[in-house]
Image (cartoon, rainbow, N blue to C red; front, top):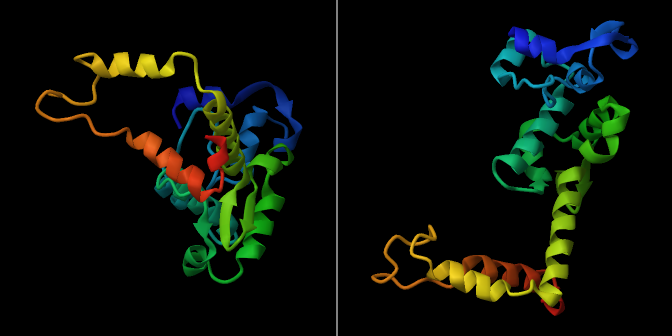
Length: 193
């Protein structure tokens, strides 16, 4: 760790939850679950963590990291349990419980792993997506004042960033709108359009 990272951990008062060290409370998640949380203002490489911290007994952390990476990197909000069993064995429920028990109490609601309908996910990500969909559905009911006119004007600008030479190539239909309607149909929410 360089000096900047060490300073980010420093606290002027002793932290009773970390052996009286003068360390920020924000460092507790990393202290408890180093394979899935980071120290304040630092992202250590996984290889460095493996070199410093034994993995034995921390399989629950690796499961949570796998699910988080599947969401953040691969864009897969719900990871099939079969995919996790290939990597972590059949005791996924035990690992989920161990992870929940290891979480700092302030993180239990949002960071917990949840198993539903044959999939595993991080609760906070599901709640965030749910909120976004509800907000978009609300906006889709009434629309945004003059939005269509603003989009048409933007599309007619020569440097809108979509197509370099629009005169030679026709503008395709808006894929985002098509995907939104497809999603709404699949969810049985077509009446919200």
